Image 1 (tube, rainbow, N blue to C red):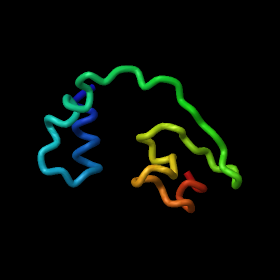
Image 2 (image 1 turned 45 degrees about the horizontal axis):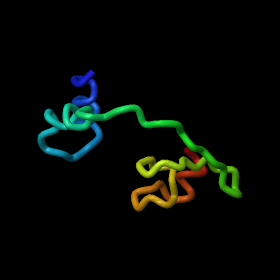
Image 3 (image 1 turned 90 degrees about the horizontal axis):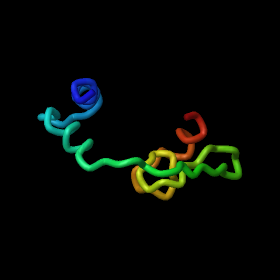
Length: 70
Protein backbone atom coordinates (compact mmCIF):
# COMPACT_ATOMS: atom_id res chain seq x y z
CA UNK A 1 0.00 0.00 0.00
CA UNK A 2 2.89 2.39 0.67
CA UNK A 3 4.05 2.10 -2.97
CA UNK A 4 0.61 3.17 -4.19
CA UNK A 5 0.58 6.16 -1.85
CA UNK A 6 4.13 7.13 -2.86
CA UNK A 7 3.15 7.11 -6.54
CA UNK A 8 -0.01 9.12 -5.82
CA UNK A 9 1.89 11.74 -3.80
CA UNK A 10 4.56 12.03 -6.49
CA UNK A 11 1.90 12.54 -9.16
CA UNK A 12 -0.20 15.05 -7.20
CA UNK A 13 2.27 17.14 -5.20
CA UNK A 14 5.32 19.24 -5.82
CA UNK A 15 7.29 17.66 -2.97
CA UNK A 16 10.77 16.72 -4.12
CA UNK A 17 11.26 13.58 -2.08
CA UNK A 18 7.99 11.77 -1.39
CA UNK A 19 9.33 8.30 -0.53
CA UNK A 20 9.28 8.72 3.30
CA UNK A 21 5.96 10.56 3.37
CA UNK A 22 3.50 7.61 3.17
CA UNK A 23 5.23 5.83 6.04
CA UNK A 24 5.13 9.03 8.11
CA UNK A 25 1.46 9.55 7.29
CA UNK A 26 0.62 5.98 8.29
CA UNK A 27 2.67 5.98 11.50
CA UNK A 28 0.38 6.03 14.49
CA UNK A 29 -2.68 6.69 12.39
CA UNK A 30 -5.68 5.09 14.02
CA UNK A 31 -9.32 4.96 13.09
CA UNK A 32 -10.67 8.41 12.20
CA UNK A 33 -13.87 8.01 14.20
CA UNK A 34 -17.38 8.61 12.97
CA UNK A 35 -17.93 10.95 10.05
CA UNK A 36 -20.19 13.92 10.78
CA UNK A 37 -21.89 15.36 7.71
CA UNK A 38 -24.33 18.23 7.46
CA UNK A 39 -25.95 20.05 4.59
CA UNK A 40 -25.52 23.76 3.96
CA UNK A 41 -28.52 25.97 3.09
CA UNK A 42 -27.70 25.48 -0.62
CA UNK A 43 -27.71 21.63 -0.23
CA UNK A 44 -23.91 21.29 -0.31
CA UNK A 45 -22.48 18.40 1.74
CA UNK A 46 -20.25 19.66 4.55
CA UNK A 47 -17.89 17.46 6.56
CA UNK A 48 -17.56 18.23 10.26
CA UNK A 49 -13.96 17.06 10.59
CA UNK A 50 -10.96 19.33 11.04
CA UNK A 51 -8.99 17.93 8.07
CA UNK A 52 -11.35 17.57 5.08
CA UNK A 53 -11.51 19.96 2.18
CA UNK A 54 -15.29 19.81 2.46
CA UNK A 55 -15.36 21.81 5.71
CA UNK A 56 -15.61 25.54 4.91
CA UNK A 57 -14.19 26.37 8.36
CA UNK A 58 -10.78 24.96 7.35
CA UNK A 59 -8.29 27.43 5.89
CA UNK A 60 -7.58 25.00 3.02
CA UNK A 61 -11.24 24.25 2.23
CA UNK A 62 -12.58 24.18 -1.30
CA UNK A 63 -14.09 27.50 -2.38
CA UNK A 64 -17.93 27.59 -2.35
CA UNK A 65 -18.27 27.06 -6.11
CA UNK A 66 -16.06 23.94 -5.95
CA UNK A 67 -17.96 22.63 -2.90
CA UNK A 68 -21.17 22.88 -4.91
CA UNK A 69 -19.66 20.88 -7.80
CA UNK A 70 -17.83 18.20 -5.81
